[in-house]
Amino acid sequence: MLLGQFSGIMNFEETEEQAMIREMVRDFAEEVLAPTCLERDRNQKPPLDEWKAFCEYGLQGITIPEKYGGNPIDDISEAIIVEELARVDPSFSVMFCVHVGLCSMTISLHGNDDQKQRFLPRLAAGEIGAYSLSEAGAGTDAAALGCRAKLSDDGSHYILNGEKMWVTNGASADIYVLFAKDVDHPDYGTKKHGGTTAFIVDSSMEGFSVGKKEDKLGIRSSDTCTLLLEDCKVPVENVLKGAGNGFPIAMNALDNSRIGIAAQALGIAQGAYEASLQYAYEREAFGKPIAHHQMIMGYLADMATRIDAARLLVYKASWAKQQHYEHDGPRHTKEASMAKLYAGDTAMWVSERAIQVHGGYGYTKEFPVEPFFRDAKISQIYEGTQEVQRIVVARSLL
Image 1: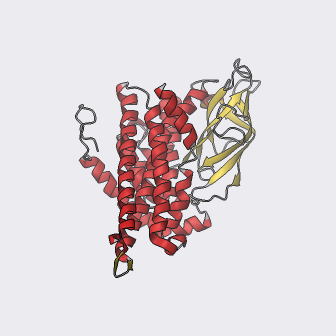
Image 2: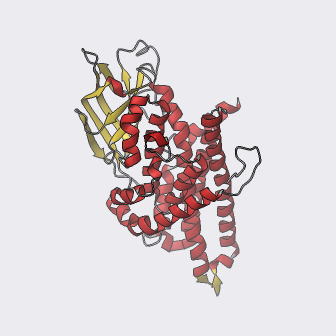
Image 3: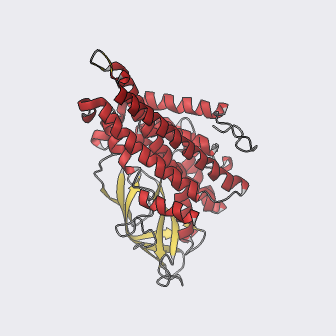
């Protein structure tokens, strides 16, 4: 989409490369993810074998510079990848989102050369990345972190204590971007987010362990866990941009990742719509396919229209993100929140109507719209609830 995205000419056709990426990822999703996604959903099994197969395409390194082993692409192509994965397997799509966006891109943007040399090649090679900001008392209110970090007496490492929650890829990841408050920072205790520091944590570090795995309504093949920090020793060399500078890093990461979640919601809506369209032509009632009955026709028309509108918002936000980083354009906070807000609501609306189109069959686990309905709900919650997105958009207008 947007062939002329950097020339000032508005063109709504995909580039040849974008079309190729869409076809490649769609084939992977249908051939590799589709045969196992329902079983993995039932058993809450993370797609580790599927991840290894996916890494053969090199797409796990799309937000990593080539000098560190990555394979960078444009931001609309990134959204297309997420969309196509979520069209078949939303759990795999969020695993990919967190790896390339919240973890790899955060280190690419904010890490020094030493940190990039140590961690980005590993992420580009297929080790899994994660991001840990939320806690029991610090979800929407991200500044209210309870995890604490204290510099050791010899100044060589920080000692982290606390419990993190809602960590996607929690049990599967090797590398985490994790936030805690430095208790020795001069802003600690005087500002709400004072002392917030971003750390790169390796799963092998002393004092680090994975706790409870959440039993979720949807995206059940994505492991969402708590992380336990018990005198966890993190070298000072693993602090991103210095002590106390973590809060802007966290907010910037959310601007980026909200576009990924919007693309995931778009893919869920697309998958539910396609299943409904096929079923509406196959199912007959009163002597003709239900697709030819006016009420069903209306549902399908509204689904297609809302999905197209969501896609435009997602791709525009992706374009704005690339303009910000590569051409010093305005920050993409508003566009990201608009896309996440509308696409999340669209995924929920379309998947609910998809069940209605399927009737009683849609309420069973034998048809694909049931998991889409369960998976869609989280797109209205994580990376900032819909209420938060409305606040962000409203503030940008005032």
